Length: 431
Ligand code: AMP
Image (cartoon, rainbow, N blue to C red; front, side, top):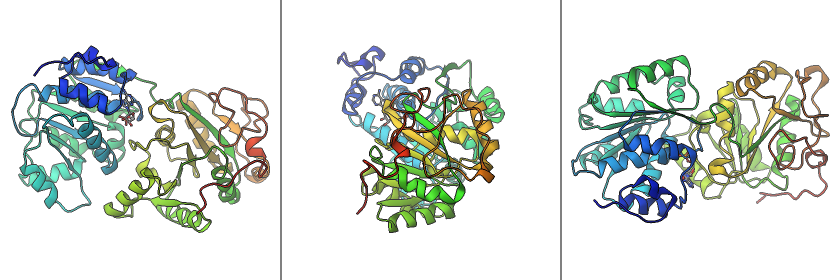
């Protein structure tokens, strides 16, 4: 097929013409850093190790080379396999691939558990060229002889660290055994725990390594810690949600139960809030995500199930109502805002019992995180956390919804804003 010289920033890659049209239709004008670094190596057929957090544009970085390769001949059957840890991420990857491949005749199928298998089996009978799915269901279908992977030329493992966290690495190793040994491998991970490093060593052959801001929050995110006592968290949340700049927020809680209860409380208080957590059926999860994407809801209360990979544009705030379990989860959670180089705000409610988490997270990020204290929400002195290291002055202030002002978190916090509990703040998001 002819190569296009349509003048987009993507023309430097000499992609198949149909893909260049797809890129334009997606609204991508110039490649993001990860794309600029990954696509050429991908097109050369090299293995790639991408150390990048979500929101950087890594889906197109792996999708365009694999689509271009498939378009080089007409062989049918599953020619690319993309493995992702969660159903939400798999769905999002498929949507992006379908957008980019909309001017081709390539077919894509999504394979994950929690939904009836028959639709997926029917879709597989159409012999789609691209299979995207989660390890458990892929393995099931493989073992039942309903999925054939002997034509796979490109394997992508996305969010490999998350797959390790979820205990999927043994399943992945079994799936690898069903793939032809002569293939291209692309592995993406935000962090590299030693098990993932071992997998990468076994899997990748002289990979081209792309490392983007590993483990550091995206540069477009202002993030801060807000010191508060456990019993005032709910009021503080209300205070932040009703601030002028808060248009749409994801609120993270530690447990499924807390997510459900908080979503109910916010709805009762008049917010358009919806909860999403692992106890919901796939259909309920889809409905909640769809409602949030389409702005029927503007607050999503979630457990870490949606902390990775999910791309909802225009989330102005991520609020960690409870601190995440691990420092890595912090980066993933706050990566839900500031996506695609837009600005976003992330604030984490920190109580006296969160010392250990705080130390570990700042060690991982390599920088102290800005502390804010909101007037009227001062922490209980008996549970005051160890926040003596405050690199930014008095640690008070921050304008509404934007900790430390409009710049990065290295700016000194401004007075007013969150400290001003009612003045000048409009109530939003009430029915
Ligand atoms: P990802 O990290 O792949 O989830 O991408 C995050 C968001 O960035 C998605 O909404 C993509 O559609 C968008 N995106 C990816 N590449 C570009 C680009 N070159 N220009 C504009 N938006 C992009």
